[in-house]
Image (cartoon, rainbow, N blue to C red; front, side, top):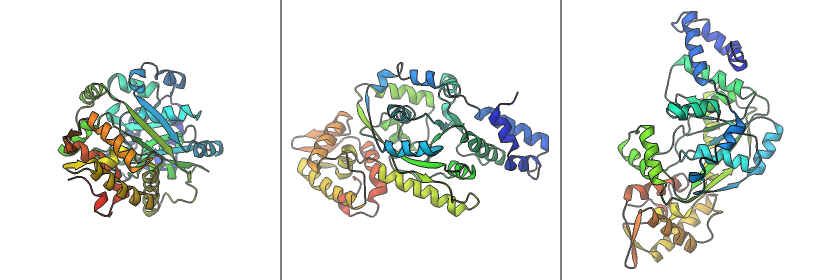
Length: 378
């Protein structure tokens, strides 16, 4: 028996057009493939169980202090209609932290779009039957999949809010990556009146899987998820951080043309730009940007002050920075605990250059073409 969303997807004009042929497949073949993809995408959110998940996950979540900004934008948008949260992607913790920040602010839960690599084994069962996440094949060019996905998202948005990551996967280098346009196009194509995008930025003092990500970025390859989880658990020993989730003013999708590639790309770039400005500037990133192979505290304070002046002129989110001196003190302490730098007499020396660059890269989108004071560490 077909569920309501499946029936609605099969009734959409773009799906009917695909089923009529012209793709090299017969009608029955095309229908079979679309049904298979619909089975893959089908998900159920059981919110009471979802909320209860934070209790068994408490050993990890207690290490993360959740802080939020801009919840008033979300309340305003959700009062007026459906909402799409579009965020940057730093860590696997994002899937836990960002929905919990919404709950902290008494905001209805969205359905999350996540990479299909997260849907194997018990975690996959959890995503399909509890969190309500939908699996995304990020790099496929299969027209049957793309037409099915976009139609599914359009129908889903008539019933739920949606949350997805504009970069696709996590950033292995620490930088804010270029936007992916597939799901942005699907949201515009949905044609839902008053549908609004909430640009969302998440930032951590320390990213739980920072070493895993920075190594993968250097080697340009992805490790098996099960192995990565084991390493993340090991990395959690002694780990503590703040997580800043910042929501921006809504971008209403009325007036954007889904048939114009230029419109969709411009919209994706606008959302990424808003996310970049919302992204909280933190002490670890500032010290990493200012660090050289060896530096004194005074050197770091001078460089951080110069960097802060550039960031302020570009509208960066500096709310977590009291002063250059305080930022250097906090950043040094956290990077020493993470074994990124080490104290040596009256100076600090780089111990893990790859990881230092990972944290420095998080300011690249704000410091592009900046003077030497904002350059990345050598």
